[in-house]
Image (cartoon, rainbow, N blue to C red; front, side, top):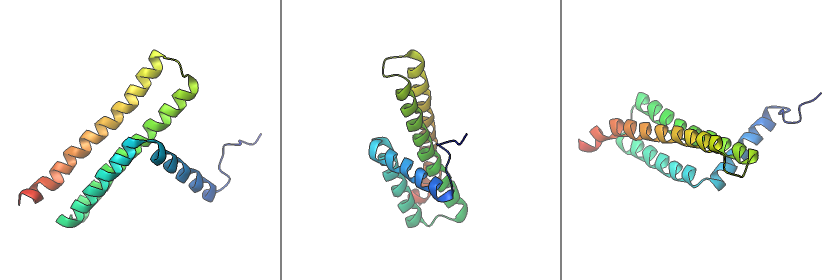
Length: 122
């Protein structure tokens, strides 16, 4: 029995992944806000001339926030498919996923401070 959800090749997998990114960009205001902050961080990195290690750290932090937001969105979509009525377990799951985004965002602000504050103050 063939799995109708399985990608037939890499090109199809890439197309589906891009569709997921596009959906999230169109529907999730927070992802768009996070991308604005990511662009600002990248511009600061260019202005202050981050070294290779600092760039790697910056990109990892940016990626972790965007990743967390997209996983959160996927969880919310799946749970909304499960039920549109209030369900305490659904609320808890959504809150946990949202909390993961918050933790990732807080860590990114801390890392940004560590990377940029010394450069700004000098």
